Figure (tube, each protein chain N blue to C red):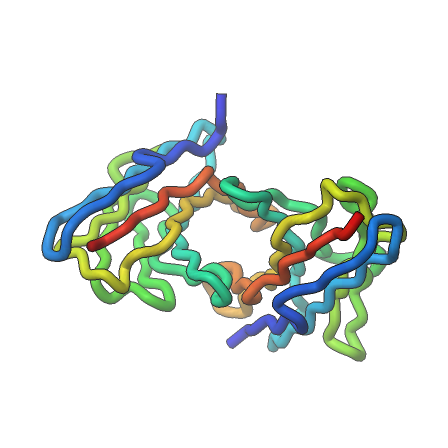
Length: 114
Length: 112
C-alpha cells in the first residue's frame, strides 16, 4: 500500500522568507505525486503534480517541487513567501493498487508572519 | 459556475438521523470520490466510483453508503448519524487519464 508523511503539521515563516514543506512517500510502483492547497472555508486546489519526466515541477503561485526517488521525497518550495500563501497544504500520492486512488498526507498549515 | 458542487454546504443534525450529502459535476468525469477531513488527519477516502456500476469502499466506509445515480451525481448517506461523524466532507472527480482530482467546496456536517 502507498502512504504519505508530511513532516510538521504547522510551519511559520516570515513574509519574503523561503517556504519549505516536506513530503515523503512510499509506493511499490513509480508514483504520481501531487500538492494541493486549501484556503480557509474552501475545497482543495491543485498546486502542482509530478507524473513522469522532469523531476523539478513548477506549479501555480510560484511554488515548485522536486521528485527525488532516492530519498522518496517530494518537498514543496517557494523562494519568497507572501501573506496570501497562508493556507493548509496537502501532499498526495497516486495509489499502487489496481484502482489507483489517491492517498493524502495529514497536511501542513503554513503561517506567514508580516 | 462551479464544476463540482455539493449540497448542502452546512448541516446540523441529531444522533440517529439519516443524512444524505449530494455531489454533482459538470466536468464529464467518470470517476467520483467521497472524502472526510478531520483536523490533523488529512483526507480519508470513504467511497469511490469509477463508473455508474463500479462502486468501491475506501479506508473508512463503515457507517456510510453511497449511490451513483448517474455519471454526474454521487451521493453519500449516513443511515444513522453519530457524533464522531462530525467532519468536513469533500466530493472529488477525476478523469481516466491523469488521476488529477478536482474538489467540491465541501459540506460541514455536525452531528449532535
